[in-house]
Length: 244
Image 1 (cartoon, rainbow, N blue to C red):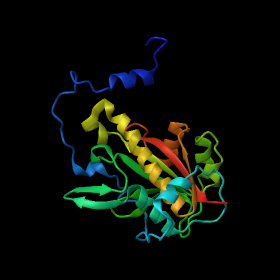
Image 2: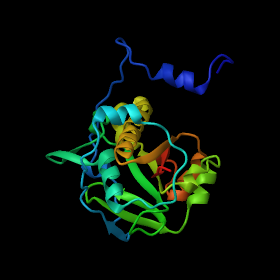
Image 3: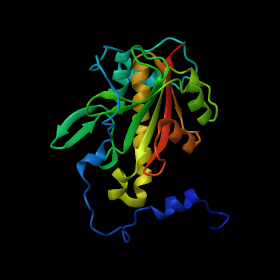
């Protein structure tokens, strides 16, 4: 690697598509079960079906969207959480074994999983949860107040500890890599961005403040939510709470 190059530059160059150079080989289609994660032995909490409110127009929501870093100490409702989860990864259509969701994904492969660090949600204990998309429920990973620990992992960004909840989005790499190989990382981060924008827009529609977080110690966040950091990695966080 020359001084004028870095890993990012090399990755970008080596994963370009060229008309005279494309990756060959036969694609091995994976078992459909790899496209979603479950915790079959975990305690779980059923979520209400999202009761979508009549709110301001999409144009007002887009215009008013901001990153909000300060929140009141009020709890958010379980219905608001259900709406947020539906908005970011809810199933909107089914075609055979495949589901289509509220956020786009490269190749409809959906590598992103949603974990939630809950501080103040009505009817929920504090703790780390995983969203089971197909059953629309929360798997309980562990209970307790993890706000300070997760905030410390996010370079001591205090809004994490002060939030009502913080989403942690992870990527199960194999879901996208089997098809897109080295270029998969480009699409994985795009997918996470699509999801986070939906969180912003849904949050604004509900009167909630949201702030995306890309600066964090990867291994520490992986440890907080309980993933291996190899086959599944943390890629994005988003703190959410009621506006002051």
